[in-house]
Amino acid sequence: MTQQPKTTVFEYMSGLARELGAINLGQGFPEMEEPPELIAAAQRALAQRSNQYPPMRGLPDLRAAIRGYYARTQGLDLADESVVVTSGGTEALAASLFALVRPGDEVVLVQPLYDAYLPLVEWAGGTARFVSLTPPDWTFPLDALAAAIGPRTRGIVLNTPNNPVGTMLDRATLEAIGALCETHDLWVLCDEVWEGMVFDGTPHVSPLAIPALAGRSVKVGSAGKIFSMTGWKVGWAVAAPELAAQIAARHQFLTFTTATPLQWAVAEAFALPAAWHRDHRARYAKAKARLVAGLEAAGFAVLPASGTWFVTIDLAASGLPADDLAVSERLVREAGVASIPVSAFYAEAPERGYLRLCFTKPDAVLDEAIARLARFR
Ligand code: PMP
Image (cartoon, rainbow, N blue to C red; front, top):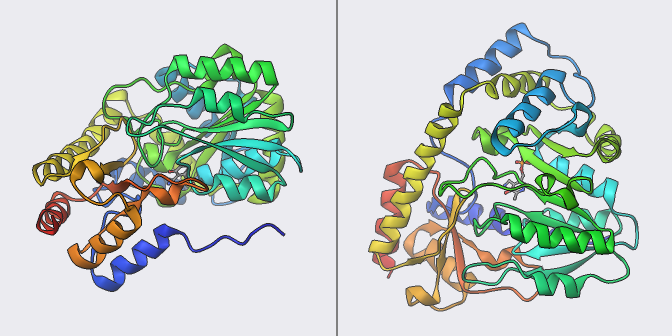
């Protein structure tokens, strides 16, 4: 048996926030208006479509809608057999890693990292090697990646835009990673669930758009993030057809299928025009700007981030001790605001100088959080 998962820092902080009546800017879920178009589509699907098992790989309409979305937004030309619909991005990560990792394989993970990657690699029988982005601009460590590749290395897990720090991988970096993958015959699993939540115009580039990587990469997406419906748990894995078939074979015995009416609703939602996505994003961009401006006016140093629902505070640059665990504990107890220490996203050699805050909250909640944080300083 590999190690049992511990209680996550997200549960710990949300629990403390509930117990103390603190504002929860820790866990990442939106408390904003939910898109009425999606709720109406789900209601219609429940009443008029099917509530029975859909095809194992997902409704053909949804798979076509996903391909259309990626053709329009990222210029990807995907085969129908390349898409596997899953129960959230989380299941897509699990099915992909169970398809890709064999016992004894080494997999390179990039810190700070989303908490699901390491247990999934280990449950597949793999061993993780870690490299870390370099703060405060979180540049990708190409040299460290090259040095971490050994004879047993089989693959790399990437995440763009990155949760927790919000930075993205550009084409040149992905091309350099592609050259390493060709030399060492490695696969790439790229977690792109935040691809639709980019606020500064940085183009999202998937490894599937890089010739050296297209045939050896899996792209993971989530309707929960694109449409702000995190509880729907509709996601997908996209890969070359042979690899997608391997992933589908794992999906078959993880969940088999994903809620039929919600698949119909997401398929319909993908027909919404680009202007809908622009307006949807603009509401989130406004919330982000409000939190950042408030924090900066209160003397906090906020790091630039392109995407996700999070911003990070640089503690030392804010005149606070670079001890994220201690500061987040004090913030929730003394200021009444829950945050997430970025060190929680490390398995080894953690950075201790950064705190993650979620901005997808109503204006009044953000204003009260800013006022409390300003008083704390
Ligand atoms: N990957 C990352 C980087 C995430 O932030 C999340 C959600 N917080 C997921 C995967 C999981 O996505 P889903 O909710 O669709 O399972």
